[in-house]
Length: 345
Ligand code: MRU
Image (tube, rainbow, N blue to C red):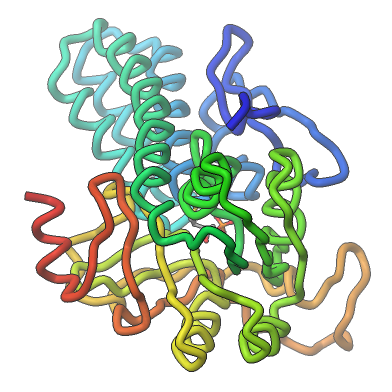
């Protein structure tokens, strides 16, 4: 694939530069964060979103906070750093990559002397970004094997370059198959209520010249029944030890439909998205967001005043509905408890 025409996140002299995804697709605007609070706010308000991208942003935000520390002793530095970690951890609950990145940064902080820790944390954050892109490329290389030469692929939400350091997980597999010359047609679910599919997935596929058709979330079943979908590939926010997978709300419904119509359903996710400490998906914390995301269409209210709305941001797809999990170490197959354990060995 040619150089990406955009960058999701970068650390430059002026600060941490974040492509503001709230403004896409109508405006391409970059935020410049000069302190960690700005990064926390960007995560909470979804200026940056997608599990791996949130992890990268947190690592950079923590490193920026560390660089700005005026602590005179190592103890004071570590106490303030722990507080900052706790504030990042409270920004969004479901994507485990956030906690994975925080833990990695905490380990470096504990193992490095002061003030050398400041540059060590910056190097680690940049490494997390670099590794994420490499990991996505590796997932693409493994995953393209499941894509037929001519394929109509349904995806939900956005698991592309915008949701990661670059290239993407589910869309990374699609880009890799496309690069290889496969004839790809992507169907992008709009993904109510935040419309990551309509606003982000179509935008980035279009930027990369991959043919894409937008559908509303309630059209997938009809397309599957008409044999217009060969394959489903989605990303993940957290995968339990048995393969149960949390991803954007609506993913579970797509998986049930795919199962009913005998269509392969793949999850693409790096090992940093797995949480082997959770036995099943039941234990995955689900984020509930402001009901205004559901009752408003832009600035217009679409339900009578006083009507309440239910707004879980994620659901859990049981492992029994998943054909395979594409990782940087290869494609994991059922039984997942065994294949996931092997991947971590
Ligand atoms: O609420 P979001 O936009 O952060 O949710 C993102 C998703 O659900 C993605 O599918 C997931 O994080 C995988 S990103 C490679």
